[in-house]
Length: 208
Image (cartoon, rainbow, N blue to C red):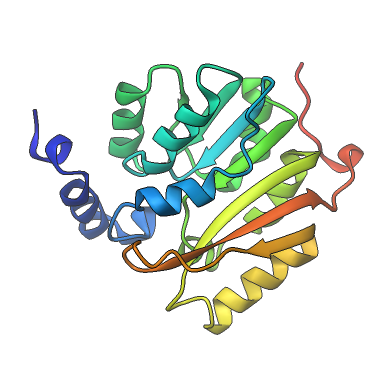
């Protein structure tokens, strides 16, 4: 067993130092934050869940427990080492090593759609200066879809984070912010966005 397998935090710090723009966060998310992030995953049926930026798999594990063998779980992870580790630890998960900006194209290639839930493990900093990922998420979701996105409390009041939060409210009919998860490091909140404003015919992913 490697040091990184024994300690996900050490592996996360190593990847952050190696490539901070690809990793974006310096530590893995806590179980408490993961629980808030997966609230949109239905407890029944066969939902399609897409996870962006799995990292060391904190949200991946929570999604898998919530699904309990149901539905379809697709992970899009840019970091090749994280992608390989998630694939090894969770054989039932479909892992794609690619950029989440290409989400509609990637899901179309997999025949995965429409999507019921998108869980984003990408901090706001990962969105800075990038193509509009929020719009891409809205396009792949079903009309009743749910998108969860976390934000660190110490950055959410900065101008870039405020603009991104505004974009979230423009793309979804309902956006709710959870209470602060103080036991996460750093403390964080979760935005729970429901009912994308983009009509299905404007770009909804459909299976071939």
